[in-house]
Length: 592
Image 1: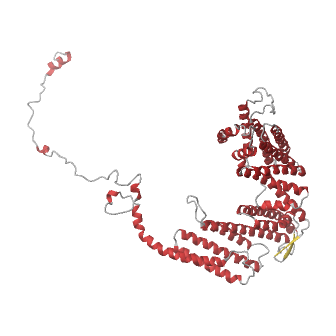
Image 2: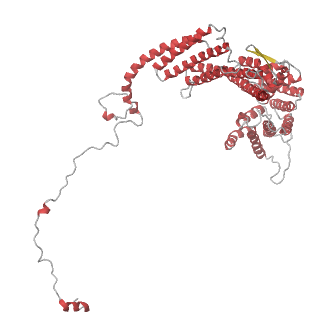
Image 3: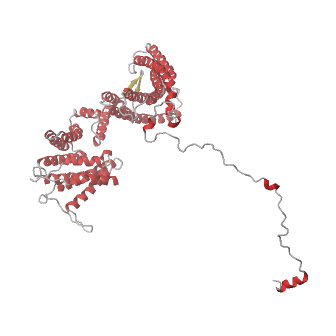
């Protein structure tokens, strides 16, 4: 929040001090202002509450700057912005921020309405409030003081918010009219101004195009569904339209699911009685076609995730039915209890779809990483893809294939087991190839050469087994291309191994450059040492080492023990014997 307020302090004054346009009229870049504010204050991450708080703070600053306060802290006195007081473009900005605050609150409530449906009523009230403020802005812009561009932008903004209100109310015809009006104005503005501003207007047109097609479909235009599906492939129609589009597709499939009663797989016809399974199987072909037509890897990844999520939900619904079927079988001791039931076979079929989709998704990711692996690194500091990343993907693929071979009802299907084993060999060959590549990077030539031989072994085994299975390699990576690449890598590896022996022989001299021997200790040998011209050259060792020196001699007086000293008895005072008289004198102090 503190960072937001700092950004406001830096950005807001520029926008809030908008002056008159060169032609003398008041001007306001409505779309540019709201887009910049939304991107800088929360909407980049879908945080509408943060943007709403920003709008409130900006409104307070504008009122304070313009002296347009609504009373004081004790009493509220309402004021209206009229054409007569319209002397500054910030009055228009004030009304615009009121509309944006109401709109952001409505979008916040829309997010919360997924779990609390009662908030939808409050949502509609705030959207109507936003549309009312935009109408007020449009009326103010009708003043002759305002320039023509601002008038057109205000009309487009009002049409957009009105369309949003009608869209939420499911008034498709009126919503379509409002959105079309908004689209027409922005297209005209895009053709009349600079390329930078035209790009901003075209982005808004792209945002509302899915809404127009959705309204057209609900009015009765059946061709609009194809346009919506195409937008889904290109990643268009985010936010509100994404949910509406998914609901529309589910609704269309539900209508078709009534006619579907069974599905055939691996030579066995299975009745489909679960509605969720019917809807999923009906949309399976459309989802696979959408993935094949995806324009970029990000869209393809999103479609794969959507398909896998639907598949998991369908498998869970079938699993619940299987539990109830198992209880019924326990009660009735049936002779055919060992036979795989239709419901169990349907479960195996859905699991097969899920695992095959996982394999295709990981294979698509592997192809993307391989292409990036062959590209030269643009930035050395940024970590690029490595062979280890591909090894992990192929490990997941092999795990999925191992689960495929254990599906119930397919244990005795020899053709299916052969196909799975053949696919396993292909992906093992690719996994082994990238393990060899990782060994090449760390210059383990012998290990890499052995792994390349293993790749060739797997590839030749695949080619020999594929002859007995028709069309078995149709959806698999090209093994012949892998063989050619391995042969080329083998020659490169042998050449690198030979060159590496010379590098190893020269290695000790290179390593000696990096030792800590100072220059004064190696004056006899020439070495390239770049540290000598750096900030901390290693010239001498400091502090120096201790060296042995002769010690100062110590003298011991050994003759003292053999010296005979002269007698000193005559020098020593001897005390005489006083007797009783001396004792008495001592008591009374006479002798002292």
